Image 1 (cartoon, rainbow over the protein chains, first blue to last red):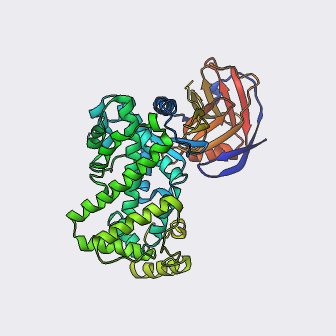
Image 2: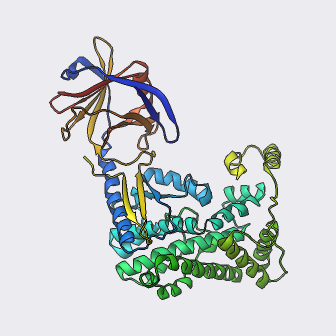
Image 3: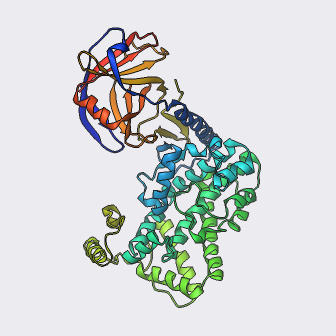
Length: 371
Length: 128
């Protein structure tokens, strides 16, 4: 019989077996080479986590808040706390489009209350401090992440648009983002589009939580504003996301999924999030050098083939228009299909870059380049 | 035995079903895990290597078949492997086997034996 050996991604047919013995074990006949480690106790945390996640999902189903746009199958992948720490770094460097499977929700045992004692400054521990109820904390995380999956399945053109925007970046900009942690500052259009998704996920989570636990949306705003560095969100909290929730959450109390149905409500959530996202950009323009940010935004639009007038209103309006247009029909008036460079010229640029500055880990990632 | 489940079917707002599939971080579908204490030993006479798995006799092993054996990078111990023995309704897992020892087991047709707490054989197989 052929047995498949599996590592995370590949199978190797390297083993077969047959039943061979049926006698009592006498371990005195053996020199012991290794005693197995007992990790079973820590593994039981997965059971604890699954129980809470199931509670969240069953509640969502019972409340009819799983929209029809979701696919027939979703995956929930459970990570240990240590893996989460490693993967989080990877996530922070990567936009959502580069995750292994967009229909997978990741949860970690690090979310459990027993892992909060040494992490008072993380978002999760702050959630425990505020809400006290572990299920409420898990609900917030699960519904937020579910919100991302709903967004990606309901407005998939916008997710693709993120990648289109990223494709317009030069290698130097990618380098600066990665090594100077500039967090996509050179592409505010991307930040705005990603901010929209974060708004949506937070809003989706908030409308369910407020119904289940009675707190106002403001309770969730207070805890979610600030940095996302320790949150479970799979994108780093861009500077532009700070205070992103302050205004748009005020509108959430007008929504009623029991009255209108969740399929209608997610469209309303999108509209609110888009308004909020534009508002965040406007707020940002008040506190940074306007010209610099506007120039970058104008440049982002231009690289997508969209010309704007040299004024703040037109640039912001066109930005909103391009995102709206993407969400509604995937086409953008005036959007050129032309990319700044194709794969061959990217490789040429990479060679040039590496000759000039030396090899840079991460920049040679062919998948990233192809995207 | 843990009580992990591999999936749950719920319903969407339009009444259509939606299935959430639960996976371990190595990508395997979740199933209950039967606790086992493992040792690896070399027979003093025959030099045969054997992996002993001592399990609590919570389940009846008669007619049970191992459907698959897989190994995965151990997340708790670098350079070690977690060995998953797949049965229909559960796994038995050897957590954190030394990678070099695993190679030795594979190259020498090691025997894997599952025993109860009184050392009675439940299932014994040779791997190669």
